Length: 277
Image 1 (tube, rainbow, N blue to C red):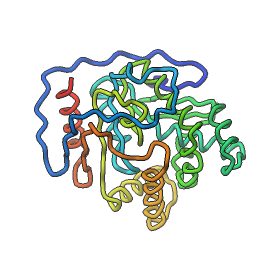
Image 2: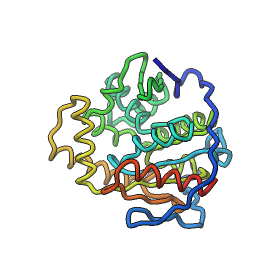
Image 3: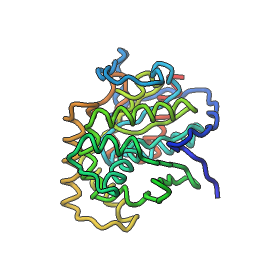
């Protein structure tokens, strides 16, 4: 069994080096892909004072987008192809939410939620290509994907002090090795100087179908109408929150994956990365 640690909040692991790649192919635009602008977009979240200067974190590929757009699957594929580390920031927020609920923290108490997040004993590692998430030595890989956690994330991810903690940890992790980071504010806030930024889109209907298949595969019960409503509500919360709203970075490549197979989207991302290298 192959296992590699990604996150351990008690000690930062050493990471592997990136794989070299050459001869970048030309990226051809299509109806599904919109090229990034040339102007650099600077984050407006200047209140976050991090210990690691984000300007030094350039060997990062960011993949942002709403739930079900294909972020995790494509990020893992890209990381594997390029020999990069894979950072699932959504799993980090889900784990913090699970930890708060597990400890009966009042989900309306912002101070208590902040304290809970700062104390989370989180470990994330890849085992034979699958992400394993542990909190306080408890395997929560399956639990953090349940509708209960999904619906509760909004109580936590809009708190400035919580996001500051997460951003700091994410930057520490990415400073260890070349990284593919997926989330909702990777290109706009966490890694504004990333060498390549991708923003994935897909229709609500297609994203609902994808999430339904994911839940079925994990034997997690759901109602399809409720699932679509939950994804729509999450979209609205992510796009309209005051802190780090979901939006493409100014210099991001935008890809609509609604009608694309994974291989097509992966090829477009790899071509874009090589074009910028």
